[in-house]
Image (cartoon, rainbow, N blue to C red; front, side, top):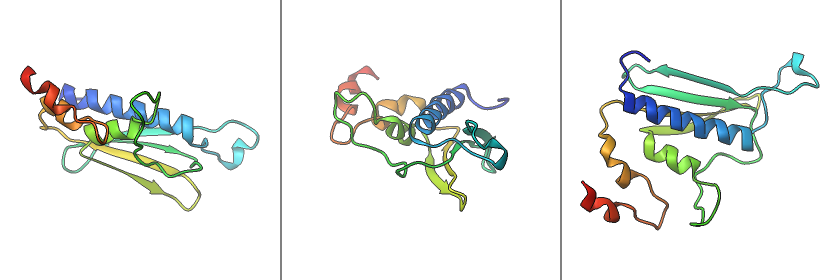
Length: 136
């Protein structure tokens, strides 16, 4: 994307990857009347908002649970995706439609210092900032 800092694009790619993974793992595919008996799709989109921030979103056919950040154990193989999104995005949320579709969106803003990552990424109850303080 022209004019968007590379760090914002990098964060957006990771966030979009997490959103797509979650949609494929937990959501149902989108269906339309002509899809009868066929597999559906998951829809991804990105755009710049009115404040110059990059917005990414993924829409699927909904799932059995609402997307919420988890508190995985240290040895768990998954459950960190929405925590990663929370750390990298300025804001994120879930939008439902009356047809059962669910869109999870995230806004990644420009101008945020990228070297704050160690203080933003973490698992509840486990602090990562202290071990990295001496590396600055």
